[in-house]
Length: 373
Image 1 (cartoon, rainbow, N blue to C red):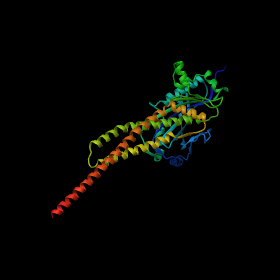
Image 2: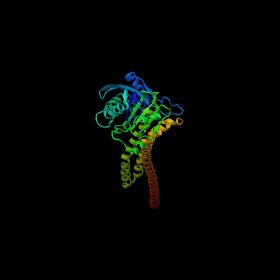
Image 3: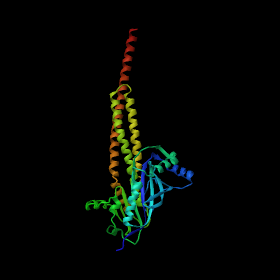
Image 4: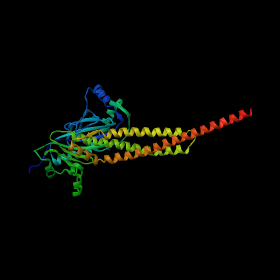
């Protein structure tokens, strides 16, 4: 059997950042058109029926200046795009094309790209691209953040092989493990089985394998829906991680404020409790609004194949676990808000009772003084 070669393909490097409380997507479209005379488009899934799976609020996609990268001995012009979500996340994508490689060469190419621009530390182009976006589109960012949180994902895509191939036969002809892990040493059989567990095919000639930080896609029809879904799952993870960290920082401050409010009880206690309760209520409302937007960004109703890939991506990235952690912290703050609201009402009732008693005493004093006169 002849060696299977990658006739055409690409490595897609994704890097996602939380850059604002929310993003005005209509403003992005206007700004980008005015600034560059380019086109900002509302991104939708290509092949999936709208009624089966669709964005609740389609993100805006803009094309940026190509990036020239040296991978091995080749200098490549790589398309760069940014996709902005209304809940404050931007996803940057660099597509590094490749042609005419053996599978071993393609695996090495993918791992080299990961070392070159995939590492969260070290020199890479992501911050330069992000800084330029902030400068050009800053007025569309509502309450910009300077969070250092980010997510990354590497997707190896084969569009065409050197010969027709059945997706189910690929695992017998090529070793997917090195491209999915970046490992050079052999993995145990159990580790290999776990890694390849999330494998999916819809037609005979396609294959998708999803892991927590990499994916392999063979899609001869140049359909980008799977890559888009993987990006959405990473955007959700980033948003939940951001609010999980925010609430982690907020809870100790909340406990300290509550402690101080309870230690300094006086005539202004009801106002102090009420102000603190309002602050917590506002925090809960804001976090709930944005996390619900992130959670519902993709509406899946009918496309079973894409729904399975989407669910696998969410599970691999542990999105449900991080979302649940945010929910528990919100419950703690809601309970604290309810308690403070009750204490504020109780303090107001006590103040009202004291006022009534004081008025009664004043009235009695006036009656006594008047009777003597």
